[in-house]
Length: 116
View 1: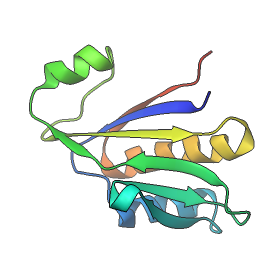
View 2: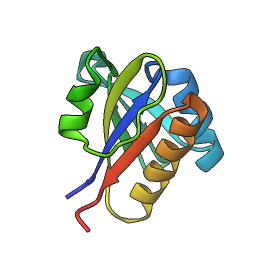
View 3: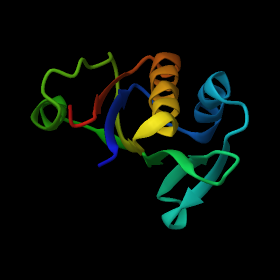
View 4: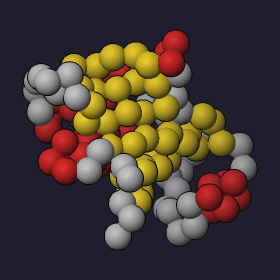
């Protein structure tokens, strides 16, 4: 079971802030596009994924977020929802650290569900 991640930001997640956040955790990670551009993935030197992010979706009704992620604090302004997954183990820790750096950089919040 991977770590399921939900992130809410005032702007959509794009590759530029994702790569800046990734560089603060591991400068050797590389991006690749998945599913005809519907998702971005960061892979390590062994070509193993540490983080996979679906494209951000604009949320018009904050109640929608409250329904699927109760208690997740919401940033001010526009709301963009991004779902991600990170694997178990040390690679997943790197993915979770990238999400934390990315949310911080974009002024957003996140929750990681790891089954514990």
